[in-house]
Length: 476
Image (cartoon, rainbow, N blue to C red; front, side, top):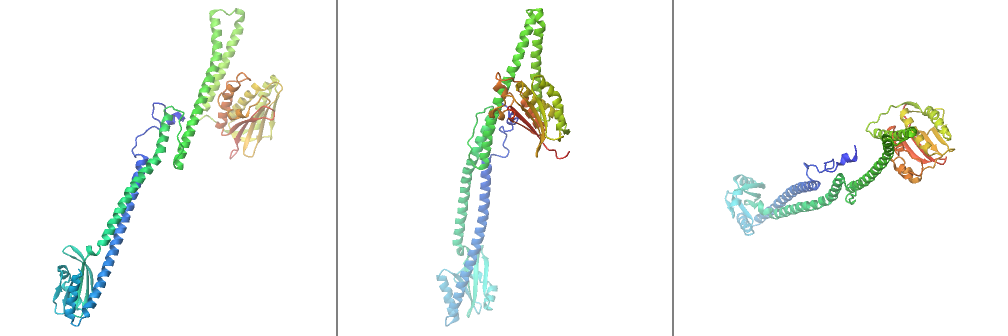
């Protein structure tokens, strides 16, 4: 599929066009993800903090109240008269703001607090009078309280503390923790929005550049910045933009070259046809004019044929019929045909075989088509007396067919573009004999079709070297 089909033609939506956004933008997703993580973390931290703080506060309050109850019981038992001393202790606790109640041996209850009197239930009275200790949580009139009771010589004493009073400091701490978590969530939202915008900005610029490419603009570039992955996308888009520009420039040059080559024989044919039609050509020149028209028509036919071959080879699935092939035998077939053609113009032709046979699995017709194309190119530029060599050999990684000539050769700059359509044709038009400009392009595509590679280089014979490498088959 072509680049234009992938990006979309101007005025048409392509694969990189602006689609609908059922999933939302990247920045929105980043924000939602960050907020979700922050909220979840805050909830977990809040639950843990509240649970641990309240549990610790309850335990601490119970220990403190138990210590006060122990001290109060000791104080009540320290007096000369146990009953009087216990009553005095209860009053002292009331002055200190501690709610308490006492029970005597006869069952009389003394208290400075209604809630303490209610906490001293008959069951707890019996437990204290029996010498037992009381340590409990209770709910009195909807108020959670802590209850600590100790037996005394006069009966028993009970201390009561509202849980809200005991955990007031811890509740303030919990509220501060929760406030801090809320602030953390807000900060996370702000930071995630800033990060999301920072991350999405280069992606948005890259997307805009892709849309510009799809709309036909080619001088498009985006700064390579952001995280490695985002920077890599921007770099790839810049490379794509440059490649498209170069490719389209070559296409334009190719079309201009082909148009010029088509116009030249058409102009000759049209001119001579008009002369024949108007009767201005003398009868004695009719044969000569007809020969010129025929020559130009064949030239035109050859150019159209090369264009068709290149188009067919550019198809998605060109036909290939691989079979077990001896490249040396194929080279001898080439020698029997091209030896005579080269000899007819005074060009020595040599076949060099590195082994009696070089077996591989390939399409012999395609290989022959490729070699014929290279020899056609070499014979066109090789002067009389200079050699053309076809060598067949086996290398460790590939089987090789090589065509070398003693012609003018190629420069180092030519080697990189040797198989580009019409590039060398345009460089050497009027300098040396040239063909349609498509022969080497067809050779390059044929090498790809065969699963091999072809490269251009400098030949020991002084001209150009073209080397076809076919990978060794796994089985013969």
